[in-house]
Image (cartoon, rainbow, N blue to C red; front, top):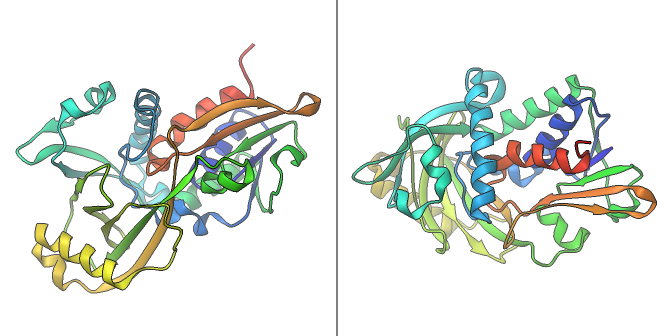
Length: 304
């Protein structure tokens, strides 16, 4: 079978399938380190993803896996880190929030100890885990999903599904980050409006402090905007003034594959073959990766 796409959703799905005994190849237009997943902030939390009832279940399943992976942070890239979602209330969230261990109301909003995933390390670990299970990753361009020569094909192409399926319901929501030398901040912080095109957050990662961010709908530009970068730093410095003087290490831009609802479904192909779609995860691909991977595997090979 072939999984198309090498972002966090594609690689996690391939791992689940390979470890269940399937022979899996991943076909990807570009290596994992060049995907949107590689520049993600990496904080576990459902963001710009629907529908919430399904998302909550997928996210909680993934949370349990990340909790186990956090025992080996240097290997997996997963750590548990304390932080605060400013301005967020439990009664604004779905039932899933009541099952997040330690999530509690504080004066600022909601506090919790949540997984923070160092995405380059995690993607490399997923690729190695896949290889140990017998899976392979190949750089291959796919122009027609129905022409992929396998009895089972899983479409994890993210924003690429817009042209490949084609599915015009998948749209980019541009996110820009600034990476600075960490001035000693050990907790994450977010102040995010799901309908605003800007937000304020910082996430400590081993390679620096990630500052964000933006959520610019239908913007395809991958070029960092210097003025936007300045305002990101300024917003974060209002919360933690020491950020203002931190040395800038890098600028990152990613295009979130947003859809009105995640598409996770089975489609028959000619000749008795099967195509499983698993895309449209918005700003929460890593957050739901394991839950969606297991459901996709079940759609690909339904239990008798």
